[in-house]
Image (cartoon, rainbow, N blue to C red; front, side):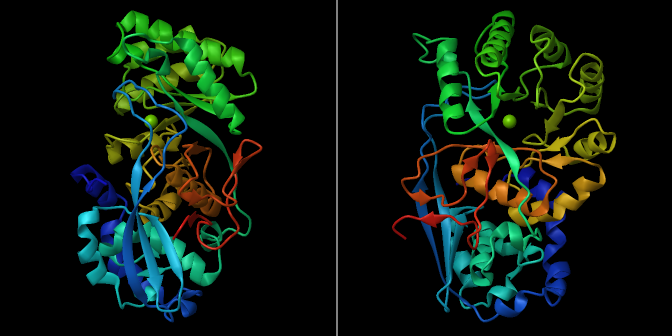
Length: 400
Ligand SMILES: [Mg+2]
């Protein structure tokens, strides 16, 4: 697990996490559910590596080489003196375990967490997901309900696993058939939205051949899976001219969204936005903010109605900062789809966030083995990401 980069720290600062400690501790007294939290003191904190292998090898995207077969994530497990247990992906460095133990063990949960805002002790942020799970368990509420919803807001879920699998293996590439097989497998898992990676001409093929293949892949998928909505993700491998050339190549094919064609810039997005509105993609959402984030640029584009979807990572930014960010996005009518790529657990965390707060549009789906985690009621049904009604995230570590 990586430590936070300077950029991530800046993102957090931009989202107001720096001011969290004092401001929100002051609000803790207003937490109507807090009465049950103080009875619990943190008794133990342990870390555990949890393998979450993907169902297949995931290949290249416009920027990065083969992604492999899935991560082993580190999860934090919190137990209280009253016997409650909560767990979730660690949002920090496992090397900080002793420091985190020193911070939370023996402390009442209510000094660290407030159900109306999230983690209130700034240095305990790496435990943010585990604390949300724990508080849900203590309060007997699913996380989405703790976030204020009476009924969960359910959204479609897209497969985020359609990479450049036509280009593997390197010495004897299998071709587009493999991408279609992968889409069929994802459809079988219940997905009715597929996000197709594009930008082969950025690193792996000539500009011309790469663009031609991107177009061919999207056309073939659209033909083979007419009941699936398509999203495309360029991983910053385009410029305005090549993005428009790609769109001309897939003329007539509707897109749910276009994600990160290039590193965000006001000029480039303004131009592409204007072009899409007059060339058949007027309803297509424009999404950015996964990485290389320039928050003021994103905010300017969102305020102007040019960008429609914010994609900051659910664990990288953090669950509590996401809760604070959502009302700000609502003001500019910007919807959210927290980035969840990599771990199948992050899909569930992102789903609970939007199920509780609304203002979502689709959830990034990462499929993985359930050998080490029981995903319970967090399943795909009717093309939508369902969320568990059990306390916390409704996820259970097998053998824990
Ligand atoms: Mg992306």
